[in-house]
Image 1 (cartoon, each protein chain N blue to C red):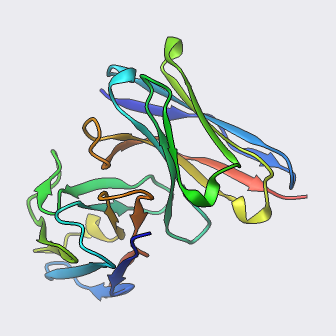
Image 2: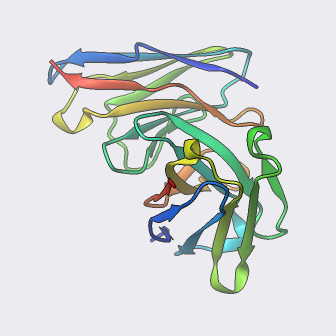
Length: 107
Length: 120
């Protein structure tokens, strides 16, 4: 199975900050990576797919980059509604696997 | 709009089975794979498997092989996930999620989730 390792596990930030979350795959997955946002008590929401493609309706302050084994999700200017947990997910091979998550908290 | 509506919360005893439904609307049900993902309390996301609603073909995570069965009823655009021989560590919110595009392995949209509690 492909292991997905996210860092950090949590980050404290202020509104307006630039936040970067990284995800590393245990083997190369080309661009088969997605990012999800999850708020408490809610289902996850797709933000980015194919490593860098922005899902329709997602604000442009979210961006994704990377290929192979190393990937990044960047929030360019953190907004109050962005405080949530974020998960990466590889879609390269079964079983599909997720990173352990990153909680973005208010500083 | 595309929508997935899941069945309500369940409480089951250890050793029992649970069957969760996921009713789809707003698109052609047979055109997109349906996945099942679970999340234990305070934990991360875990993919369980997927079903091709057109053929009924399935792919299951090895961890759940022999305990999970995914089926569908195309006449009512509904997918089902049945988990047997329940244990306390199967307590989780179970989500259905559609492929973003056919065969993409990205999940969008998601159902609202179904809490399954396993307790004696």
